Length: 217
Image (cartoon, rainbow, N blue to C red; front, side, top):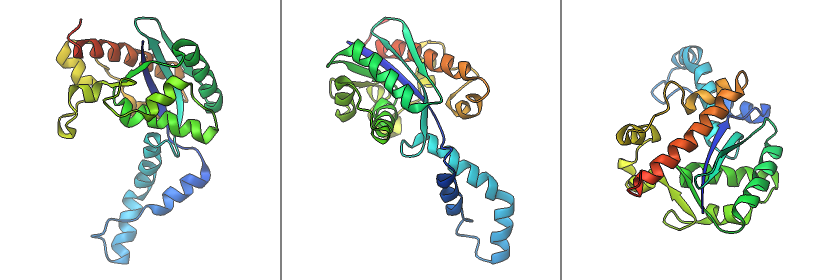
């Protein structure tokens, strides 16, 4: 059984974390004089602070999940989305438990490096234990039968890893178009359905890529 899975994440909104991140922003080392440091902070400081916060969407310690989509084998794509991450994870794990029982292969693009660790960290923080099949995938090495990471299936060489969009282009699969993951944080508050639709489309793309990587159609 294959479970194709993809998550969409948002940066932290915790004021304390944001304040700590802002406090770490400093002018680059080549700026030595107080007046040049002050000039850099005036010109670049706010953007640097915003960038520091935005990067937490890649870190399960601070960021949060707003949407998860998955599909079992060739079945329909299901979505779980919410501003309440605790409820999202509770609902997701319940659905996966019904779908996978204790054994499954989880399939995703950059699954081992991003989606699974993020899900693991957020579930630990919320104190919600994932179903057995997902726990096994979270603990699996990249070559284990519990996981299939399409990015690593194409090449495990770090210098030769490619994006989902590039693989779609190479395989003649419809790509992401004019929306990508960098737009999720700004889009979610105003049009969450667009993010959900994007995540669901990523499942379609992942499933097609996976089959092509196994010389299928």
